[in-house]
Image (cartoon, rainbow, N blue to C red; front, side, top):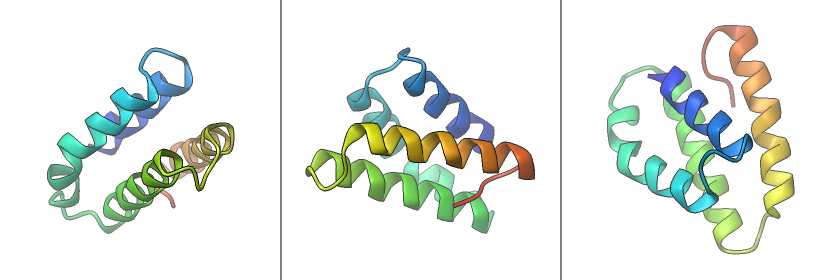
Length: 84
């Protein structure tokens, strides 16, 4: 399921989905992703959810958020799973 998350993030970074669409997707899938039982996935998704909230509330610039996501994707792909 982490691959689904990474694909959604990459679609956002590539402009295929908006910030709002990413936010809605995470909210709609948060419980299922958390219930997966993989601690790394749970941490990754909870961090993502928190960062989305920070951007929405103006505590994190969207450009900084995108840079953070790019770093997380690199780490996650290099480890073959999630990384926070």
